[in-house]
Length: 165
Image 1 (tube, helix red, strand yellow):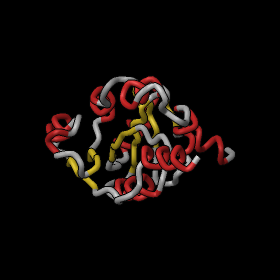
Image 2 (cartoon, rainbow, N blue to C red):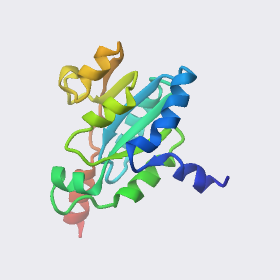
Image 3 (spheres, helix red, strand yellow):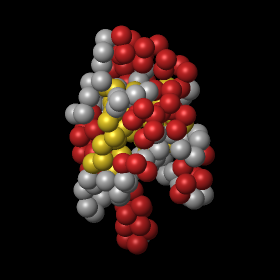
């Protein structure tokens, strides 16, 4: 299998299509880490956050907002990059094992489906307020917040481009 196919095989447009892979990981007793976001313009802050998240287990599952979901969250001019382009870029990272789209307002249903051992979000959240906290806590899992790197955000990059041009 060529490398592009390996990357594409990490992308799941429907959560149900990821079931067999998740079952295999569970059978092998792999520790599954879950995080989510829009990841519209991937930058250093994203990379460091995702690499740190991947260190918390054996497999990193990325819940990725669909284009429609991003528009509802961030406005009609977003996302800058379409959902498949964002998924392909994220799946190309060696430390991301699965990218699954979700279209809902929150990834709650996806977290319920994945049943991660570790749920990760940025430290701008209180652990108890993180969507899926109840699911992961009920199964004895961990909820971990990671610090962001100051000065890196997709919105900041977009504003810099607008203000420069």
